Length: 239
Ligand SMILES: [Zn+2]
Ligand SMILES: [Zn+2]
Image 1: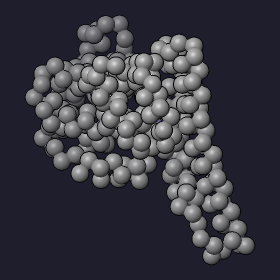
Image 2 (image 1 turned 90 degrees about the horizontal axis):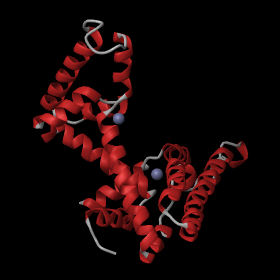
Image 3 (image 1 turned 90 degrees about the vertical axis):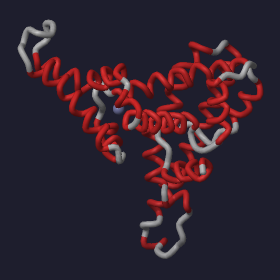
Image 4 (image 1 turned 120 degrees about the horizontal axis):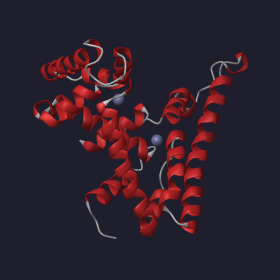
């Protein structure tokens, strides 16, 4: 199979074998988008037009506020508010048929970072499915993943049909399901152990690490994001 930037990226993400590979690529894409916004994007007129129009969701506003780039953030917010003022506060007839409040509500639904991440993920999945269809060694690497979280198991299974033919589709679906189900079982057993530890008969008994962090792991598994532990492992590897 020909190597290009996309296949190299897919190989790199899956090669990490750190948690759910889609959560990992999503986090990297999110961090890149936020760094970009707080950096060179401020000076790029096409991007400013987009951020003025789309704004950000609550999560990504918060991530931008946590960066130290006060000037870029202030400039981006200021021209975004200009756009909101013009389209959602000014004269009723200036912009199409919708009322000002309807146009205002549209602003609440869009996020530049989310859009960028979705585009990124689409490209990533396209490359991943192509590799799964064509490359035996990638199919092996896929099976060696730690797990696939719940939303990404749904995403992969819902998209697989578009890309994979019968036999490979079956293999892909079985492997994805296995990787997700095994993690589900592990989290459930951790939660059960944690609940049992509150029984007075178990006072003083040591708790396994799996049980200790099982609520955090369960929430990450359910919401499609890397655990603190996985993020730390990746940061160590990057250094
Ligand atoms: Zn995931
Ligand atoms: Zn967002």
